[in-house]
Length: 199
Image (cartoon, rainbow, N blue to C red):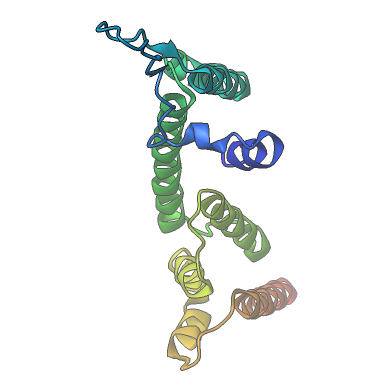
């Protein structure tokens, strides 16, 4: 929905109708009073007000046509573009917060398990991308801590070495170290298997 506002602003310059604080012009203007007439002049319908209502309804219609069926059911009773926009923003914010919480939980509970380091890093990177898509970008240090937490006991030597560093490690450098360590473990376990077979 973030793309709607710039489109209205650039295309039709109607973004003002999304502002809940924006007020339409007065509906009526004072009528002209005849000289010597004691009666109150009949108010005149303000043309600017009528134009405001027409444009507001055009923006409202555009918003409603841009929504998914699920969101439309929540917004269909809105009478003005601003009312619809406020509801949409509220729904989007709550959905984003729910996604943020679930993604953070997935990061905190992720583990390498039986997967290769490359698969594990890909999974963690996709979770980080998910967080970025809802407006919460993770710094390398945070991601490194999540990655280290999910590793099994085989990787304790590298985890200890990373933890002992004075300078923070980048995710790319961490990946290189773990791939190298994984390859050495594979070679070692392969040579052990060969030795036991020969014996």
